[in-house]
Amino acid sequence: MKVKPIAEVVAFLQPYAEATGVEIVDAAWDMRTRSLTVFIDCEGGIDIDACERFHRAIDDPLDELDPTFGAPYTLNCSSPGLDRPFKTQADFDRHTGEKIELHFYAPYEEKKEWEGELLAFDGKTVRVATAAGEREFPFDKTSKVCLCIEV
Image 1 (cartoon, rainbow, N blue to C red):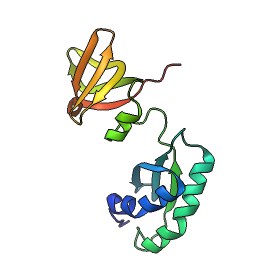
Image 2 (cartoon, helix red, strand yellow):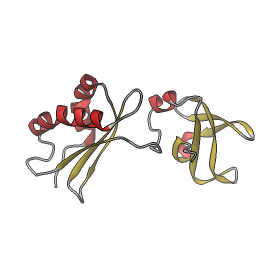
Image 3 (cartoon, rainbow, N blue to C red):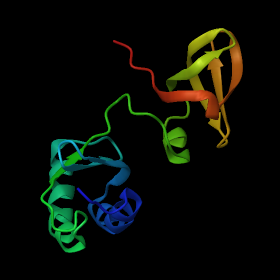
Image 4 (cartoon, rainbow, N blue to C red):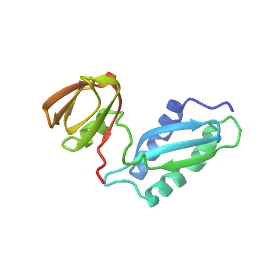
């Protein structure tokens, strides 16, 4: 299935996100299921009503954009989940002061996972207060940075 680039689709949907009070945090095509999933968030968190409101707002305009060049597809609107990876400066800013997990591709100072309170992010370095003290980690060495979910 031929599709328009996800960046083009997200840029097209941005005004609808703003109008419905949500933020698009990610979007992805799944060619296996022929679906487009748009992950959204908003102040206070996402619920089913916000997903439905956004879905209704973008359904007809997406038909006009025709992101699949006439091929049928399924549109999904979803919460990114509690353990979604931080991808933008806004993600880090939103969670400053909260406990996070850092996962690394390869051991970083002999550990593949670190956790602690997020202090700052400058686009290249994640500063965290860990049990071992304040540390700085290179963001490009991480495979995932997300909220620490404690059960």
